Length: 455
Image (cartoon, rainbow, N blue to C red; front, side, top):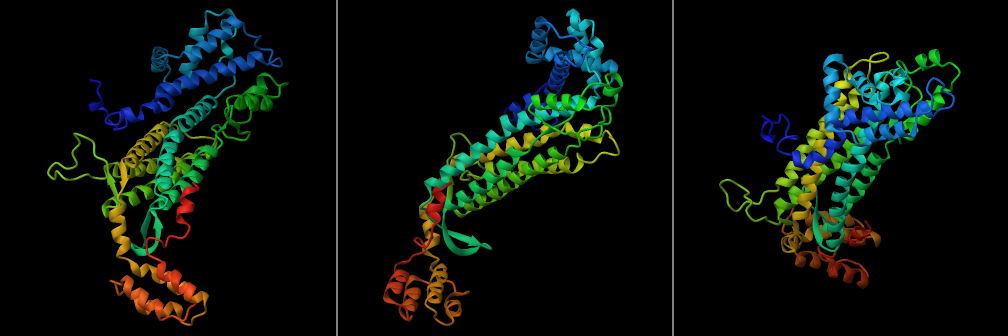
């Protein structure tokens, strides 16, 4: 029985609709399709190279057929390759045999069918296939999802740039900020992290069984194989790695997965902070008709989007960190431990995209509650102790900090009247006193509003 209800993973079951865009990049179908593309491009490159005389230039008709097979690769094609694999018990060799079968009607290829997969080890095909899959999944799905969060946060930063809010350091009332500035802080962090993810160069190689072009040189010695390999890899939009073992060592993939995990950690921090602000009443959540928050408490509007996001980011990072720690390690010139692990790249991306969707959706439901935010500010006149003692220091009043500490630390319930009475006793210029007496917790926000608008 085929149903989302019978799927082993929630990524392909409960959450399949949200992760479906990744299927085009990380499914087994996507991997097989990428292998077909690399094999065909390699054959085309050999045929087009004047120095490689073992294969004559291919006819325009054959080239069109090859491009059509690559661009129009179907599920039926993939199923045929899987059927061949049932006999070969080797997935890449099955692709080679499939291409011989499909291209046999073209005389120029039929006569040179042994040159399909020429001098390649399976990892020449696999590493470049994975490079294309990763690049597509990152650039076409992951980064656009992160950008939607950034846009939500930018909107909140600008909309609430002036909305003064009590800050909390160590969970205690602290120097006020604005709600917009707190959102702007996250925007700045995410932009840096996003740039790191986007900037990782994906590496690729096509240099034979142990990275030395052994078979290439043995068969066609008077040929510049490193030059040819570099040009081929770079035409695919992948950065060439000239020094490898049998596998491309995956250091670049580890760099990417680490960068993704760092971005995710920032989002976990955001999810927890927003959860807390909702708990304080600083944000309300727009309700959707028909939704239920609790099976027994009808009033509940739970912050489930941020909780789901946090949970899935944790799963994503667990997989990403295993990938980044394991993939660069291969015994001697290669072992097979990377092969099965690489098949889980889509799992890591899936949990990322699922988490980003929840976070973005949750941000879209938020409504600031100025009245509740204002209540906390009005009850926190003691936070102006910082301003008062700093003005006193500027005028070189001895024991400035200590005087304010005696007045406010651990006292609680400091009122406007208490603070103003203290300020009036100070030996300060009248202009400085007037500034302090005009200050309120809501206006003691420094440059927060300006900084919020700059994101």
